[in-house]
Image 1 (cartoon, rainbow, N blue to C red):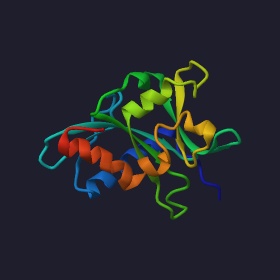
Image 2: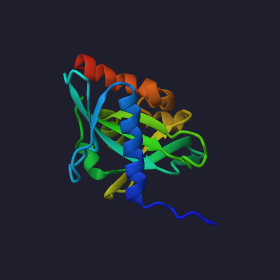
Image 3: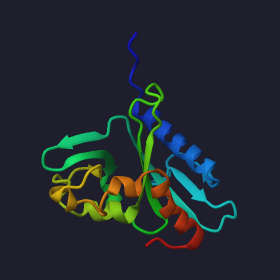
Image 4: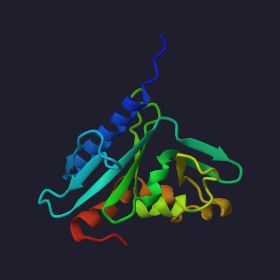
Length: 177
């Protein structure tokens, strides 16, 4: 029996709920705004409600890419409107579902400040001026990828708890550096 591919709406919802449960398990308050809220899939705050961030969740089932020029990287589609999403209080959660839950391997989450997304989108990484652009997370940094990677080893820098600690800094201390 072959399994049907989930719709993009179901895939997106799986990513949003996965991130919401992950952040809730870390002790943060997570709210799902009503549908139609632009650029915000989740709102995250401390239990005390001191600071809040908005989180745009992008989910891909097969984000892996390998290119001779850039090496190994993951990509997610982002709207061209993302070029305007700046500020310490707006972040992205890029979710790599792969074949979860069938694979038994949990999804990976990469927490990226909107400033890093905007900075990359202003480069020539996306050559075409289309409605949808692609944001990469580099798994290895070579000299070509270095031009586009906001930080060295950016997969490790943004992944899971390491990536989330940067959001936590914003939520607890009002600042991201």
